[in-house]
Amino acid sequence: MKTKSTFRGIIGIILVVASLLKLATMWGIMHLSWLENATEEPNVYYFAAAILIFVGLHLIYEGFKGYHANNYITKRLKIVVGIIMVVALLLKLAVMLGILHLSWLENEPSDSLELYLAIFILLYLGCWLIIDGFRSDPGQWLQRPLPLNEDGKRISCSASFGGDEYIYHGELFHGARLVATFGGIRLDLRNADINEDEEIDIRTCFGGVELMVPPTINIEVKSRSFFGGVGNETMKCDDPEVPCLHVIVSNVFGGVTIRN
Image 1 (cartoon, rainbow, N blue to C red):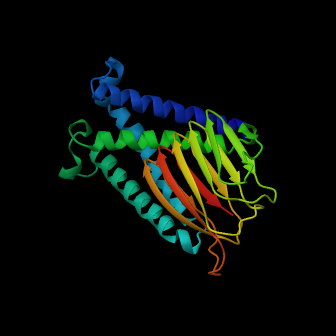
Image 2: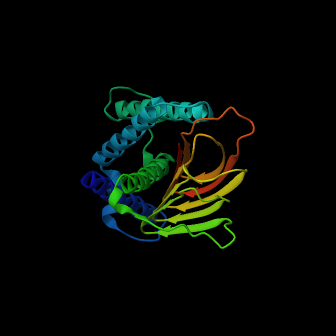
Image 3: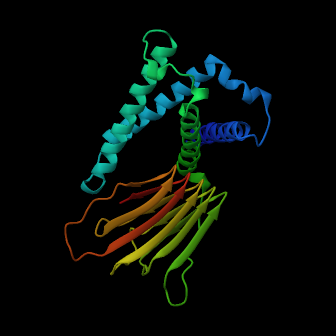
């Protein structure tokens, strides 16, 4: 597990650094001849297309995995986006190889928005690999005591270049503010005492948050994401009297997972 997660992290870092350097050369911030001429090599297009097809297939796979009533739309959206990506890229490869002739796909990526789109998707994939590899490595998580105030009110947790885990063992929960920057936070509320509606404010920047909640509450998510997203995999409780956690998320190249 550790070797696999480390490999994901290394590949993710390579993709992020290469994407950022390529953007810097395109915008004139830096001048690196080996990157400025990279888009003139056909093999670069084939490599990028193969990676993006992998991303599309992964989205389709994630969409077909088990879903619940409150994340049905998210799952179906992943499938639709994944299918569009795979089909579009296969058509592009067919045009590049001379199998098909479609004028709207025959333009050079360097003369259109295709190159920018590919770079940003690769950048997103790199961030996802870093976060996913980090989460899947148990050795990366440091269990910390709950930062409870004397009045037991809202807690505030932040993690940078590391992973912090906070577990409730019957304590009252009155909301939280979680900030993950180039790191991760895991908040386990499955045994927390939640007897009224509460709010969790989550902000990530090249980081990830994993939120585990009991099945006896409902989750309401509101998010603003720039190359990021929220995966709500919780079961919806039909009892209108149960408490609700209002999760407010702001992601910049980051992700949040909520599960029971």
